[in-house]
Every structure is written in structure tokens, then in C-alpha cells.
Image (cartoon, rainbow over all chains, first blue to last red; front, side, top):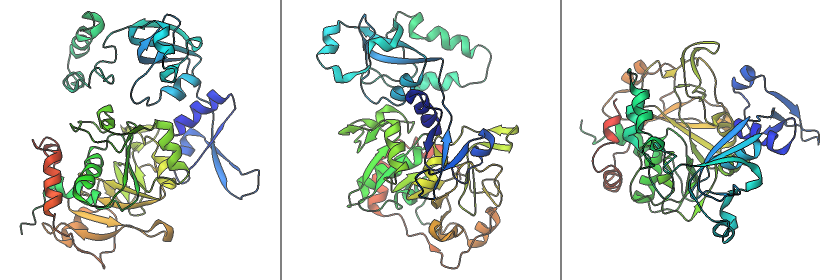
Length: 167
Length: 244
């Protein structure tokens, strides 16, 4: 939530973003977050979070056209604040589609192409995560990746779709 | 005494029992037990409430219950998607009635630590973080937390670090339910206990001091609660992950 506030400060182009709550949390101390009095005189104090401006945001989309317009189906999680806050936006996508396909339902385009610097077509690129409605989380792959043993990382990378023709 | 409770059923059912008619209830990341509690309440109780979750799900009707409470599968069957910033904002403006927030440690004042064991700058264990708890705990109308381990190292007199403070009302463990009234600034008090243990056991296993003056044995699991829980975990996979 304070992360969203920081991303919003960056997206809105302002030096800080007020945020509800935080009172009583040690996170304010260790992060050096300040609180300010309501300038309109309610007597309330509000924490203000400095901007978080990622150098690069990378998101995975269902479809993209050659101009970089990217469509995301299903839940967007952090994609909106993240792409608006970052200096540069890169997209990987399940498939390339003609612009007319996106223009038929422009409300499904999460990032317009003018914001996107570069893109790559990577079928099953969210693996071992999920991509609605195409595939679900690969829990077996996640669990084997979590083992703290030699060779686990190499085996994980070797199993990635981009090394296996997207299948 | 065979009360019919397992550690798993006690946790899920007593979390579900916190949900009230007409409320908006929310479950977050790393919150499989509250996710199951919300789904159980939908199946076992007659009243209406709205279930919203961290994956963006609004009133989901999942065919298959995902292993992770942030799996997009927990959006399935619902008529809307509510993005991350949407549910945080809803909570911030007082629109979430009951929020389930996890903890590594909880103290008698109803504050939680999800950040660090040991010193922040030189930790013994770096924990995953609150995932918004510092904002949600003071702004949600009520907050319930849970621990699968009921011990003096999890239920503590003094937290290593205060991640979140505010409107925590409820703590559920495999053997007890504690409640407090944030508006009165009261401490967690024993509301009910699993009849498989005694209050003396609870005192020994709880790091913070608590009042047990009004406590009663927890009402047994009902047939509907038992049936709903079985339908959510037919193979016992979730139950197998909870060890008392």
C-alpha cells in the first residue's frame, strides 16, 4: 500500500503521496517516512510517501500489436500503477495481433503503445506463473525451484518456455 | 474429549465465524486459511456477505481451490475484477469491514510483526513484510489474524518489530480464539478455547498475559461447517499443511 503510494507519487509527478494508516508502525521509523498536518485544518496527521520511480517496468500481456499496444486479460494486479510510474516500459506478450484486433475493444488495452519502449513475443512467458485464461500456475515448477540445492537454478532455466519453443 | 476439531478445521471455521451478515471481507497474500474461511462461510452460512481478495476476485465461485491465496484462479466465477490499488483504496476509506492479515508474531495489544525477527538492521530472520498491513490494520473496521503455531515465540509480550497496529480484533490459533475492542484500547482476551486443551495449557503456551474471565469452550463444529470444509479440501491437501 505504501508501495502503491510511492508509485502513485511518481505517476502523478509529485514529490510525495499521502497515504492512510501507517500510524503505530515501526516501518515509518526505519523508512524515515514523515507525517504532515492536514493543511485544511481537520487536525489529522497524514503520512506522506516519497516517489518510487522504477527505471524499468516489465509486464506480461496476452496480446500486443506492432505499435506496442498491449492487452491484458484477467486481473491486472499491479500493472496499472507500475506502468504509469516507471521511466521505461517493456512488455512480453503471448502473441502478436493486428492493431484492428485491439481497436475492436480498446478498453482491454492496459498500456497504449506510445508508452512501450520494446516488446518481445514469448508464448507461455509468465511460466511458472499463470496467464489468464491460457494457463495456470505451475506449482510443481515453483516448488522444485524453491529447493536449496546445486543445479536447481540451471534446471529451472532449462525448463523455461523460451528455451523450449514456447511449449 | 472428542470435540471433532482438527487444528485445520478449528482455524478455518473460527476465522469464518468472524464474518458477519452484509459485510465486505478481504483475504490477502499468503492467506490460504482465510481464503478457505471466506469460501466456507459462503457455503455454510445463510447470510450474504461480499468476498474480495488480493488476486482481484469479487464474489468468486472457483471450481478448483488454488494452493495460493493470490493465484488468479481465485478470481474465477466472479462478476468483477478489483485491482490491487482498488482494494487498498477501499480499505483506506473505511470500506472494508473485515480484513484477514497474517503475522509472524502478535502481542497482547493486538499488534503484529511480519517484518523481521531480531534487529531490523541485523536480523536473525528477514520476513516477507506486511503486504500493506501497516495501512490496512489501522483503516479496516476489523482485522483478524491467525497463527498455526500457538507458542510463546509467536504469541509474545513484546514484538521484535511493529509492522502494523490498529484495529486488530481477533486472533485464532488451533486451540483458542482471542478478541479485543480496539475502540476501547483493550488487550486481547480469551473468548473461547478448543476443549482439547485447558486454560492452564493456554496460559503456558501464550507469551502475553490475557484475561480469560469471560471465556467459554468453543462451540462445536456444525454439520454444515464440516460439509463445507470437506467440499473445499476433498483430498485433505490443505489440512495436511497445518501442524498444531
